Amino acid sequence: MKISKMWGVRSTAISVATLTTLIVSASVAHADEGRPGQPNLLVGIGAMASPIYEGSDDTEISVLPFVALNDFYGFNFRPIQLSYNLIDTKASNGGWALRAGPTVSLATGRDQDDDGDLRGLGDVDTGVMTGGFVDARLGPVMLGVDAAQEVADGHGGALVGLSLGTRLPLNKKLFFMPKVTGTWASDDYMESFFGVTAAQATTSNYAAYDANAGFKDVGVEAALRYGLSDTWSFTWSVSYTRLVGDAADSPIVTGPGGTRDQVTGRIGIARGFTL
Image (cartoon, rainbow, N blue to C red; front, side, top):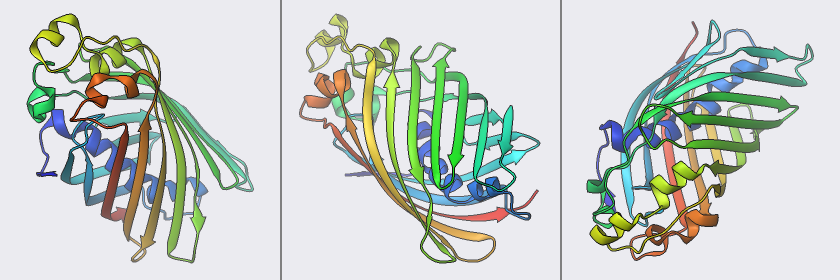
Protein backbone atom coordinates (compact mmCIF):
# COMPACT_ATOMS: atom_id res chain seq x y z
CA MET A 1 0.00 0.00 0.00
CA LYS A 2 1.28 3.43 -0.94
CA ILE A 3 0.28 6.21 1.46
CA SER A 4 0.43 9.87 0.51
CA LYS A 5 -1.39 13.17 0.75
CA MET A 6 -2.57 13.99 -2.75
CA TRP A 7 -2.66 17.62 -3.82
CA GLY A 8 -1.46 17.55 -7.47
CA VAL A 9 -4.09 17.93 -10.22
CA ARG A 10 -3.03 14.88 -12.20
CA SER A 11 -3.27 12.44 -9.31
CA THR A 12 -6.14 14.00 -7.34
CA ALA A 13 -8.74 14.64 -10.03
CA ILE A 14 -10.63 11.37 -9.79
CA SER A 15 -10.11 11.20 -6.00
CA VAL A 16 -11.60 14.63 -5.33
CA ALA A 17 -14.54 13.97 -7.63
CA THR A 18 -15.33 10.59 -6.09
CA LEU A 19 -14.98 11.71 -2.49
CA THR A 20 -16.98 14.91 -2.98
CA THR A 21 -19.74 13.07 -4.83
CA LEU A 22 -20.14 10.86 -1.78
CA ILE A 23 -20.33 13.75 0.72
CA VAL A 24 -22.55 15.95 -1.44
CA SER A 25 -25.00 13.20 -2.41
CA ALA A 26 -25.28 12.23 1.24
CA SER A 27 -25.79 15.76 2.56
CA VAL A 28 -26.84 18.55 0.20
CA ALA A 29 -29.05 16.21 -1.78
CA HIS A 30 -31.63 16.67 0.96
CA ALA A 31 -32.28 20.13 -0.51
CA ASP A 32 -34.08 18.44 -3.40
CA GLU A 33 -36.80 17.43 -0.95
CA GLY A 34 -37.86 21.05 -0.78
CA ARG A 35 -37.49 21.53 2.96
CA PRO A 36 -36.61 25.15 3.88
CA GLY A 37 -33.29 25.82 5.54
CA GLN A 38 -31.47 22.83 4.05
CA PRO A 39 -27.72 23.56 3.63
CA ASN A 40 -26.52 24.02 0.07
CA LEU A 41 -22.88 24.94 0.79
CA LEU A 42 -20.58 22.27 2.20
CA VAL A 43 -17.09 22.73 3.59
CA GLY A 44 -15.33 19.62 4.79
CA ILE A 45 -12.44 17.20 4.75
CA GLY A 46 -12.27 13.53 3.93
CA ALA A 47 -9.95 10.60 3.45
CA MET A 48 -10.06 7.88 0.83
CA ALA A 49 -8.23 4.63 0.13
CA SER A 50 -8.39 3.89 -3.60
CA PRO A 51 -6.44 2.32 -6.49
CA ILE A 52 -3.53 4.47 -7.72
CA TYR A 53 -4.91 4.26 -11.28
CA GLU A 54 -7.70 2.40 -13.04
CA GLY A 55 -6.79 -1.28 -12.97
CA SER A 56 -4.06 -0.98 -10.32
CA ASP A 57 -3.72 -3.46 -7.47
CA ASP A 58 -1.88 -0.86 -5.35
CA THR A 59 -3.80 1.38 -2.94
CA GLU A 60 -3.17 5.04 -2.20
CA ILE A 61 -4.57 7.04 0.71
CA SER A 62 -5.77 10.57 -0.05
CA VAL A 63 -6.53 13.35 2.44
CA LEU A 64 -8.65 15.99 0.74
CA PRO A 65 -10.32 19.23 1.87
CA PHE A 66 -13.18 20.41 -0.32
CA VAL A 67 -15.88 23.01 -0.90
CA ALA A 68 -19.11 22.16 -2.72
CA LEU A 69 -22.19 24.18 -3.64
CA ASN A 70 -25.64 22.91 -4.58
CA ASP A 71 -28.34 24.84 -6.47
CA PHE A 72 -27.08 28.41 -6.02
CA TYR A 73 -29.19 30.27 -8.59
CA GLY A 74 -29.25 27.00 -10.51
CA PHE A 75 -25.49 26.40 -10.37
CA ASN A 76 -23.84 23.41 -8.70
CA PHE A 77 -20.12 23.28 -7.94
CA ARG A 78 -18.07 20.24 -7.05
CA PRO A 79 -14.28 20.22 -7.10
CA ILE A 80 -13.37 19.71 -10.77
CA GLN A 81 -17.01 20.06 -11.97
CA LEU A 82 -19.49 22.89 -12.58
CA SER A 83 -23.08 22.23 -13.66
CA TYR A 84 -26.29 24.19 -14.17
CA ASN A 85 -29.89 23.05 -13.50
CA LEU A 86 -31.46 23.86 -16.86
CA ILE A 87 -34.42 21.73 -15.79
CA ASP A 88 -35.38 21.65 -12.11
CA THR A 89 -38.87 20.45 -11.35
CA LYS A 90 -40.68 18.21 -8.89
CA ALA A 91 -44.16 17.06 -7.95
CA SER A 92 -46.07 19.22 -5.49
CA ASN A 93 -46.43 16.20 -3.19
CA GLY A 94 -42.70 15.42 -3.41
CA GLY A 95 -43.32 12.07 -5.14
CA TRP A 96 -40.83 12.74 -7.92
CA ALA A 97 -38.15 15.23 -8.93
CA LEU A 98 -36.10 15.87 -12.06
CA ARG A 99 -32.94 17.87 -12.65
CA ALA A 100 -30.96 18.12 -15.87
CA GLY A 101 -28.46 20.44 -17.47
CA PRO A 102 -24.97 21.02 -18.89
CA THR A 103 -21.69 20.24 -17.16
CA VAL A 104 -18.03 21.18 -17.53
CA SER A 105 -15.33 19.39 -15.59
CA LEU A 106 -11.65 18.54 -15.40
CA ALA A 107 -10.74 15.37 -17.29
CA THR A 108 -8.68 12.90 -15.30
CA GLY A 109 -5.15 12.22 -16.53
CA ARG A 110 -2.53 9.63 -15.65
CA ASP A 111 1.19 10.09 -15.00
CA GLN A 112 3.52 7.20 -15.75
CA ASP A 113 5.59 8.26 -12.72
CA ASP A 114 2.62 7.51 -10.41
CA ASP A 115 3.56 3.82 -10.35
CA GLY A 116 6.36 1.63 -11.64
CA ASP A 117 3.89 -0.54 -13.56
CA LEU A 118 3.06 2.47 -15.78
CA ARG A 119 6.61 3.14 -16.93
CA GLY A 120 6.97 3.20 -20.66
CA LEU A 121 3.28 3.92 -21.28
CA GLY A 122 3.69 7.72 -21.29
CA ASP A 123 1.37 10.24 -19.67
CA VAL A 124 -2.32 10.81 -20.33
CA ASP A 125 -2.79 14.57 -20.13
CA THR A 126 -5.51 16.25 -18.11
CA GLY A 127 -8.11 18.14 -20.11
CA VAL A 128 -11.68 19.45 -20.05
CA MET A 129 -14.90 17.44 -20.25
CA THR A 130 -18.15 19.00 -21.46
CA GLY A 131 -21.50 17.28 -21.41
CA GLY A 132 -24.69 17.02 -19.43
CA PHE A 133 -26.49 15.25 -16.58
CA VAL A 134 -29.93 13.95 -15.68
CA ASP A 135 -30.87 13.21 -12.06
CA ALA A 136 -34.32 11.74 -11.52
CA ARG A 137 -36.07 10.65 -8.33
CA LEU A 138 -39.26 8.62 -8.18
CA GLY A 139 -40.25 8.10 -4.58
CA PRO A 140 -37.15 6.71 -2.84
CA VAL A 141 -35.49 5.55 -6.09
CA MET A 142 -32.82 7.77 -7.67
CA LEU A 143 -31.48 7.44 -11.24
CA GLY A 144 -28.47 9.36 -12.50
CA VAL A 145 -26.99 9.71 -16.00
CA ASP A 146 -23.84 11.70 -16.78
CA ALA A 147 -22.37 12.00 -20.27
CA ALA A 148 -19.30 14.03 -21.27
CA GLN A 149 -16.73 14.39 -24.04
CA GLU A 150 -13.12 15.51 -23.50
CA VAL A 151 -12.46 18.59 -25.65
CA ALA A 152 -9.08 20.08 -24.69
CA ASP A 153 -6.20 17.80 -25.74
CA GLY A 154 -6.56 15.35 -22.85
CA HIS A 155 -7.51 11.73 -23.50
CA GLY A 156 -10.00 12.80 -26.20
CA GLY A 157 -12.59 10.27 -25.06
CA ALA A 158 -16.21 10.21 -23.96
CA LEU A 159 -17.79 8.70 -20.84
CA VAL A 160 -21.37 7.85 -19.92
CA GLY A 161 -21.99 7.06 -16.25
CA LEU A 162 -25.17 5.38 -14.97
CA SER A 163 -26.33 4.97 -11.38
CA LEU A 164 -29.40 3.58 -9.64
CA GLY A 165 -29.83 3.88 -5.90
CA THR A 166 -31.94 4.93 -2.96
CA ARG A 167 -31.68 6.64 0.42
CA LEU A 168 -33.16 4.76 3.37
CA PRO A 169 -33.63 6.43 6.78
CA LEU A 170 -32.60 4.05 9.56
CA ASN A 171 -33.54 6.64 12.19
CA LYS A 172 -33.79 10.44 12.41
CA LYS A 173 -30.02 10.90 12.07
CA LEU A 174 -28.75 7.85 10.19
CA PHE A 175 -29.27 7.21 6.46
CA PHE A 176 -28.23 4.19 4.40
CA MET A 177 -27.56 4.75 0.69
CA PRO A 178 -26.98 1.71 -1.57
CA LYS A 179 -26.26 2.19 -5.27
CA VAL A 180 -25.35 0.25 -8.41
CA THR A 181 -23.26 1.88 -11.14
CA GLY A 182 -21.90 1.34 -14.63
CA THR A 183 -19.67 3.28 -17.03
CA TRP A 184 -19.49 3.20 -20.83
CA ALA A 185 -16.32 4.57 -22.47
CA SER A 186 -15.46 5.51 -26.05
CA ASP A 187 -12.59 4.18 -28.20
CA ASP A 188 -10.34 7.16 -27.40
CA TYR A 189 -10.82 6.79 -23.64
CA MET A 190 -10.26 3.04 -23.72
CA GLU A 191 -7.15 3.39 -25.86
CA SER A 192 -5.73 6.10 -23.57
CA PHE A 193 -6.13 4.18 -20.30
CA PHE A 194 -6.23 0.51 -21.28
CA GLY A 195 -4.66 0.26 -24.74
CA VAL A 196 -0.98 -0.35 -25.51
CA THR A 197 0.36 0.97 -28.82
CA ALA A 198 3.17 -0.71 -30.74
CA ALA A 199 5.51 2.08 -29.62
CA GLN A 200 4.49 1.67 -25.97
CA ALA A 201 5.01 -2.09 -26.23
CA THR A 202 8.70 -1.47 -26.98
CA THR A 203 9.20 0.82 -23.96
CA SER A 204 7.01 -0.97 -21.37
CA ASN A 205 6.49 -4.48 -20.06
CA TYR A 206 3.24 -4.95 -21.97
CA ALA A 207 2.30 -6.45 -25.31
CA ALA A 208 0.46 -4.28 -27.83
CA TYR A 209 -3.27 -4.21 -27.19
CA ASP A 210 -6.21 -2.50 -28.89
CA ALA A 211 -8.99 -1.48 -26.46
CA ASN A 212 -12.35 -0.74 -28.07
CA ALA A 213 -15.41 1.20 -26.93
CA GLY A 214 -17.87 -0.44 -24.57
CA PHE A 215 -18.79 -0.75 -20.92
CA LYS A 216 -15.59 -0.56 -18.89
CA ASP A 217 -16.95 -1.18 -15.40
CA VAL A 218 -19.92 -2.08 -13.22
CA GLY A 219 -20.09 -1.64 -9.49
CA VAL A 220 -21.94 -1.37 -6.20
CA GLU A 221 -21.64 1.13 -3.36
CA ALA A 222 -22.93 1.29 0.20
CA ALA A 223 -22.83 4.55 2.16
CA LEU A 224 -23.92 5.70 5.61
CA ARG A 225 -24.58 9.31 6.58
CA TYR A 226 -24.93 10.35 10.21
CA GLY A 227 -26.19 13.79 11.18
CA LEU A 228 -23.98 14.95 14.03
CA SER A 229 -26.07 18.12 14.35
CA ASP A 230 -28.25 20.38 12.20
CA THR A 231 -25.15 21.53 10.33
CA TRP A 232 -22.48 18.82 10.74
CA SER A 233 -22.59 15.38 9.13
CA PHE A 234 -20.31 12.36 8.95
CA THR A 235 -20.28 10.01 5.94
CA TRP A 236 -18.70 6.61 5.33
CA SER A 237 -18.81 4.45 2.22
CA VAL A 238 -17.21 1.50 0.48
CA SER A 239 -17.53 0.75 -3.22
CA TYR A 240 -16.56 -2.21 -5.37
CA THR A 241 -16.03 -1.79 -9.11
CA ARG A 242 -15.37 -4.64 -11.51
CA LEU A 243 -13.61 -3.80 -14.77
CA VAL A 244 -15.32 -5.52 -17.69
CA GLY A 245 -14.97 -5.88 -21.46
CA ASP A 246 -11.79 -4.67 -23.13
CA ALA A 247 -10.76 -2.84 -19.95
CA ALA A 248 -10.71 -6.11 -18.01
CA ASP A 249 -8.68 -7.86 -20.73
CA SER A 250 -6.03 -5.13 -21.00
CA PRO A 251 -2.48 -6.30 -20.19
CA ILE A 252 -2.25 -3.27 -17.88
CA VAL A 253 -5.01 -4.90 -15.81
CA THR A 254 -4.16 -8.59 -16.24
CA GLY A 255 -0.42 -8.04 -15.68
CA PRO A 256 1.37 -8.44 -12.33
CA GLY A 257 0.57 -4.87 -11.22
CA GLY A 258 -3.11 -4.93 -12.09
CA THR A 259 -6.49 -6.33 -11.08
CA ARG A 260 -10.05 -6.19 -12.37
CA ASP A 261 -11.37 -5.72 -8.84
CA GLN A 262 -11.26 -2.10 -7.66
CA VAL A 263 -12.21 -1.29 -4.05
CA THR A 264 -12.49 2.23 -2.64
CA GLY A 265 -13.25 3.28 0.94
CA ARG A 266 -14.13 6.83 2.01
CA ILE A 267 -14.85 8.78 5.19
CA GLY A 268 -15.66 12.45 5.46
CA ILE A 269 -17.00 15.16 7.73
CA ALA A 270 -18.69 18.31 6.47
CA ARG A 271 -20.20 21.53 7.78
CA GLY A 272 -23.29 22.76 5.96
CA PHE A 273 -24.27 26.39 5.37
CA THR A 274 -27.44 27.81 3.84
CA LEU A 275 -27.03 30.49 1.15
